[in-house]
Amino acid sequence: MRLFRFGFVMHDAVKIGILYSTIGPYGSMGRDARDGAKLAIDELMKTYGDRIKPEFVDPKAHIPNYLDGARTMLRDRGCRHIVGTITSLARKEVLPLVEKHDGLLWYMCPYEGFEANENVVYIGGCPNQHLLPVFDYLLPRYGNRPYLVGANYVWGWEMNRLARELIGAAGGEVLGERYLPFEETAVERIVSDIEQRRPSFILNNLIGPSSYAFLAAIKALGARDPAFRPENCPVVSCDLTECELSDIGVGVATGQLSAAAYFDSLATPENVDFKQKVAARFGASRRISSVFACAYTSLKLCAEAIIAAGTDDPVAVRQRLSASPARSVLGPILIDPETHHAALPFHLGRITDENGFEIVTSQAAIAADPYLTGRNRRPVPQLRVVS
Image 1: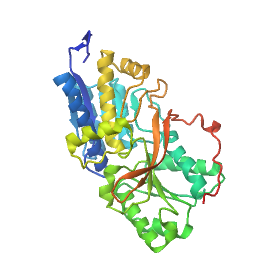
Image 2: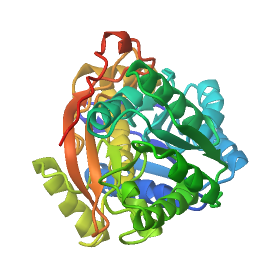
Image 3: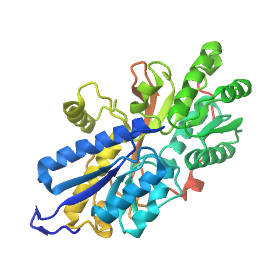
Image 4: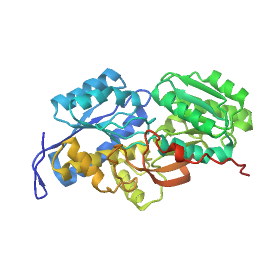
């Protein structure tokens, strides 16, 4: 497939694959991402009509289905661009196929870093955009003796490895580190260990049902022992969003923290406009997550870059993305030509009783540093007691 423009008239279809699982341990995120992509498609079709050709595949949380779906879109359906995958496991599985077919994967979830593939556009944050500013906030306020929990795959392993390094550099001590397989909900032994070790805070890199069960157990622990209430020993995540709070249950995780490039509660003009669009399409009660917002942003960026470049060739599209910032609900988006990552804002949110987030602190867009090459230039956090 190629696109040709004469003036501003487009004469061929823009085919984009959408690859999200709507069931399984991260089904809530997949459904939200799919809805964000659908909203973007609706808007694009109003402008470009049926020239926009989305190709949806639902892998049903089965890794071989990701491979089959990506192969079908790239080889058989004429897509050179795929917006999709939630987990790093799925991303890494489909990447060889994307490379083979000279395509672009648009990945929009926070991840563990140490990747900068020219066949990926990274709209989700890497650790210097989420984990490092989280620790800059937490260490002076809660102390430097955390407990680490994570999913037993690359996200959990790498995030906790980085956390250990950061804590060591700050002169602290990791009091415990435990992992659970996907969908494992037997968290009692971990919570018992946390109760005995009494950490300053808990870094939660679990996903899906494991994370939800853990948060419920921590709430029960806080009811028994005030030392484990969120104001004293918070659980902080870098991947927990609005779309999962109903799965956790109202009030279960109130007071706990999560980092994101977007929250529904942002009071920016761009978000006011965006929320009106979402309400018109999905109803006024719909809470918008960073997963929804980033999938929407990825789809819009992808289609508009193809149209502006006059071709779906990944090299031309990447050049277009790096030429000038694009407006988005996340703020101006510019893709770094060397790392292929977006500069993203940082927000830390506290879960409310209304199943939303109140924003605790924010930073303007942070340039991605996926290999942490600038880490040695960062000052070690200065710990102090905050009354």
